[in-house]
Image (cartoon, rainbow, N blue to C red; front, side):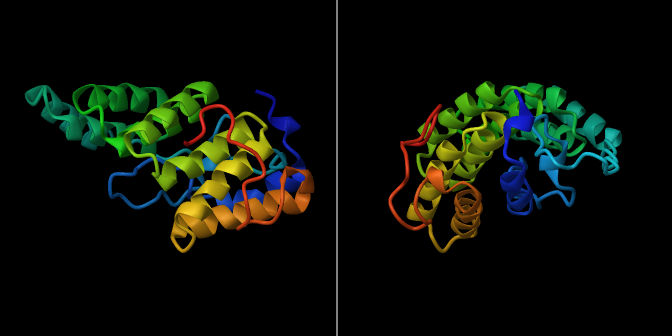
Length: 217
């Protein structure tokens, strides 16, 4: 992917809105304090020249305890998701993927774990797999707005598809305009369309274009 093809103006404005939205940890845990977008393989351009954030420390003792629980409980999907969360928090995305996949193998209809897996794919530089996994999440829960927000982020920064990103974010606004996700989606649409009017009309109106590449129904 060519991250430099994302317009600098759009990336700069969107960065603050995206912080905290493209996150894993859907299972009732607080959002990480660091800005995960900054560490993503398709991170927004324009941050060159700034010191990289220090990687979070992996809680190995916690992981060891969870892995023992997983070994003792081979059919426990939740503990495998917890291990995935711990690796995600430590920015060890390949390991997070392994454990989220194991959790979904036992509990395939857990939409939160499915979306966490998609985010992990994105951070592992696999934007197409991320979009495909988000599509599976929407098959489980067609109006899962966190998934839809993340689809927009991957479209914008992983696929450089600003029109597609604005379109899926518009669906979030249409579904839940007063929710936290709906308000964030509206701000992101306004930021995109302010810098690139060709992506469509103002937020709150009809979508400018149909979703592309694994969008929501």
